[in-house]
Image 1 (cartoon, one colour):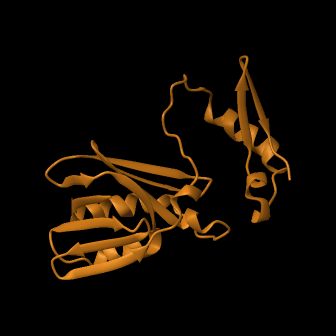
Image 2 (cartoon, rainbow, N blue to C red):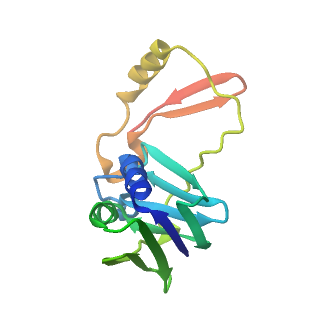
Length: 176
């Protein structure tokens, strides 16, 4: 995987996408930023299992993809590196499957990526019609079910409220 990106665009993208990073470490990969280099551009994705953020940048003069692929970079470190990079263009290269090289004029950094297979599958494609209802109704649904959700993150899936819509019926559940 290899691409180049304009430094200020990278910095702003990382600030925006880092809002979905996890502060807790039950799954270290959730503290990472998934970067996909596609023929059409770059896709940055973060998730903490509660919030997922995805930013797509199309190929342009500021975004040049030389080799496609994807990796998961340590988010906190990558954001800090991006703030310190000097130069107008940042070159990003992944080699040996886990080693990430970040270069720009006087800056030269190396990171080790997370195992990309462990990054959760986050789907932002919505082919279905959205479910629409008043915000007051949503608040009421959450209030009536969230009390049953777990508070301990030892089993993170139990800290959620599940929304299932089948046969024109919305079912909202939670359990610990």
